Image (cartoon, rainbow, N blue to C red; front, top):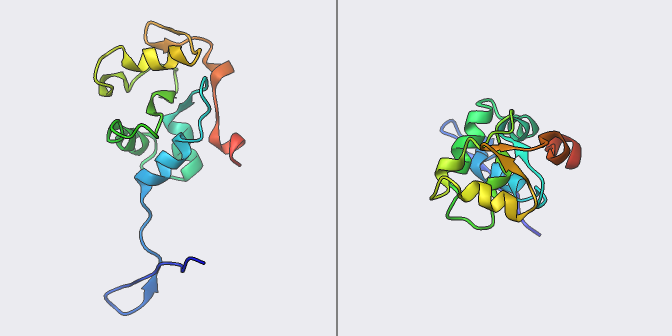
Length: 124
């Protein structure tokens, strides 16, 4: 059985270690089913991130070398592929979504409401 990790602060008190927000974001993104999308804001709300959607975007900008994190499934609140420039080519994010059956026109997911996956509802 794993032991709960703690840290000792400068005044000698014991505290939980700081959260790794990026790993928290990646854990949520890994749960988005193929063919569905979510928003930066929905992830931020689910995780209770003070910095909000921008923090989620920052985390995802650094994960493209991690094939286990399907960052292409995260879009902005309007359905726009706002992170498309971080996929190596301007069309790669769209290609990945279309391979999963998600239609994209003019860098925007078509019928985003029917594709939307909300972690607050789906995970609980």
